[in-house]
Image (cartoon, rainbow, N blue to C red; front, side):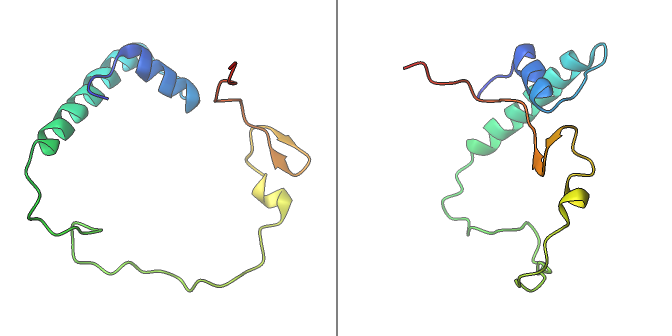
Length: 100
């Protein structure tokens, strides 16, 4: 995406369930446009001789042991769900159905 339009920001806000106040869509459009411009500048750099890294700093990522644990009780997992059906989250449809 080389350019972002106000309609893109409004659609993203809708999908994220964010309410944008007066002037926020214009401000976010300008800020995201500046970020995309910066990414385009980075994309123009020749990084062929740069070693791939997974972090900008040489830090060890603290990871907990990968072991099976008891899952959250369903009532606790769904405690903050805006909508639920039984023990499942109810989410709005995001993808359009294929009419082909």
